[in-house]
Length: 160
Image (cartoon, rainbow, N blue to C red; front, side, top):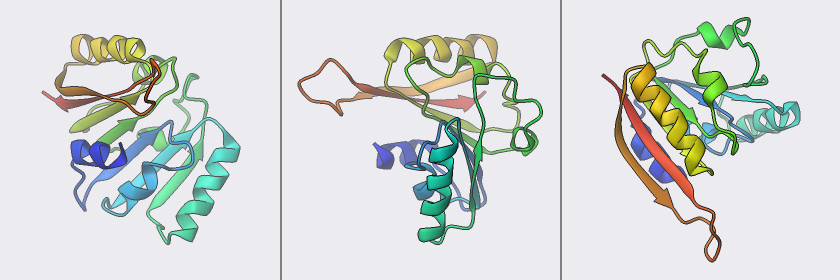
């Protein structure tokens, strides 16, 4: 899943990447090996602390982490105004609608959305395409949990 996500994001060495709902940095750290800078944001301060430790252990000074509730008002967050080339979303089952409605998407060239709940991905994809003018370029499913009804979905969007 990490390899596929990085392929879809198509990160360049000059890119700044925003990784929302980053957890321990499962995507952030591999992205930091390629990108100029990666900013990971997660709601759980304990996970953010562990992600910072992981970046230090892996000698990745270009990976930054911030704790923020991504369902709340984020206008005061300095990272929100930083400007990015690529966006990775890996939200919980509830999806990313709250953050997408306030995220400045201007300047982004690509969004990759990884989801454990296809219905929330469909809702958020509709918002990105219909309300924000993004183009859905690819979508697929990964069976990460054999013999269960759970799947991981992944979608890639490009700026029009």
